[in-house]
Image (tube, rainbow, N blue to C red; front, side, top):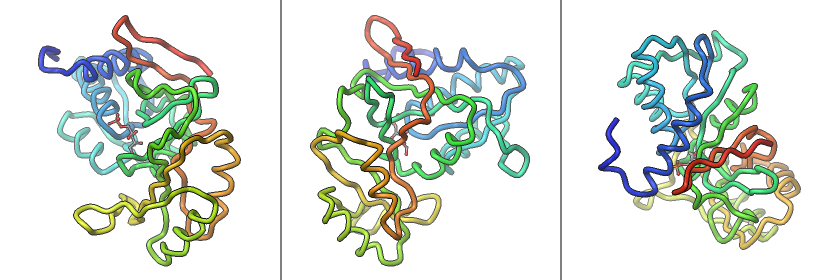
Length: 232
Ligand code: A5P
């Protein structure tokens, strides 16, 4: 792969993704994340597959599945494998002290969380702009909801102060790979992510939140001076 066409942020994502792919060993079942950084990791992985490394991947989105197909990365499914050795995925925000994540800006949070939940190890790859001291900061916290009665979920999210808004694409509700809607919450700060996750998850009609509290084992941060590897 040539790098001269990449932006500075693209270069940082590439460095983090390349470091993560070093952890891939032959014979592994991999979770293949979604989003631009996870796609860079997939491209680097494809180069290793072309050189003879044997892996199979479970994709977290239709987009990732299509890219893996084009790149010649072999895919598998939960019909064949119930456990995943290693998942490499991106994130929208990472809290430095706890490695709690916000994911789902690309809309793949449910499948990403299912894959992460059965992975022995999850490596999260980000550029340094995603690493924060406190989650929130007015950035969206995506919540996947069942389409039926989504308005009732929105009302309840409003009541607990989440600043909710239904995600639209050209004035039509965005639909996830799972056939659900996304309500984006906006919070200035999330002092207790675990408590917020529990409160949102208890609303009838909520499928999953974009808060990943315990799943990340390692976070690899691309920085201009090199990558930083943060272990849980
Ligand atoms: C996809 O739904 C998200 O969870 C992604 O992991 C997240 O949005 C990161 O994407 P980028 O690497 O494109 O920022």
